[in-house]
Image 1 (cartoon, rainbow, N blue to C red):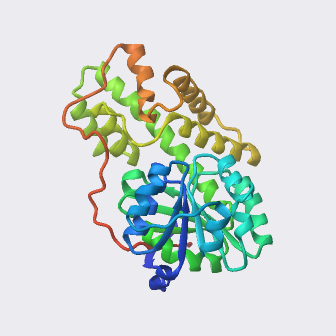
Image 2 (cartoon, rainbow, N blue to C red):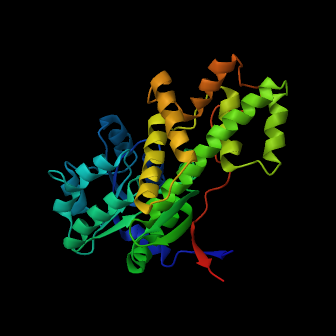
Length: 335
C-alpha cells in the first residue's frame, strides 16, 4: 500500500502575483472563487447570473465582457461548470478562451468532466502555447467554502508546480495525478463510490426504521463501525434532518456516474453496480425532477414503504468546522 506524506507547496507567495479569472459561480465555483478572493488573489469573475458577478465585484473582484477578454487579461483562467459541453463552448466557442490564449497562460478546468473531452480541448490549448490542467475537486461544498477541499490535478509536472500555490489556497490536499485526463478519471471514480455509498446509506437507514430501530442510534452505530463512510457522516445527517440539502442534485449525479460508465466502457470493463445506480437515478429524476436534491433518492424508499426517514438532532446542512489552513501537496510513495 503506498505511503503518503504532505508538504506545503513551494513558492506559495508567487501565486498571489498571478491574475486569476474564474468562470462559473455555482454551488462549488462560488466557494472556490470566494476562497481565492478572501486570500488576496487578483481575481476577475464571470457567470451567466449577473447578480452573482455583482456580488463578487462589490467584494473587490473584477469582471470581463467576454471569455476571450478574461483570458487575455489573466495569467490563469479557472472554469467550474456543470457539463462538458458547457466547458467546451466556453473554451472553443465564439469569443472563447482559446482566442485569448498565448504562451505562458494556463486554463484550469475544475469542472467534473469527461477525460476524453478535456484531453481534446487540452490539445487545442497546447497549440496556442498555453497549458491546460485537469483539476476537479472532491469533499463537498462545505469544505470548498473553507478552502479545505481536496483537489486532483492532471498535467505535466512543470505546469503543476506553477499552479500549486493557487491550488493550495483553494484546497487542503492537492494530488498530482499524472497526465491530462487522469484527474477526471479519478474524479468520476470517486463520485461513483460516493453514489454507491449514498444509495446504500438510504437503504440501510430505511431498513433500520422498518426494523423498529431508533434512527439516531442507527446513525451512531454505523458511524463508529466498519460500515461508516464520508457520505454517511455527511449526507446521512441531512437525510435524517429532512432538508436533504447537500448542494448537489440528481441530474449532476446522473452526469457523473454516466461519465464513470463511459470510462469503464472505453476500458472494456463490464460493470454490474453502476448500471443499476444509473437506473435508480433516472427513476429518481423521472419521479422528482432532475433538479431534486440528490439525497432525496431516499424518497423512492419512503414512498415504497410509507416510512418517514427523519430523526431529531441532525443539521439541515453541513458546515466545515475545521479551521482554514494552507494546503499541501500529497506525495505518493510506492513500495
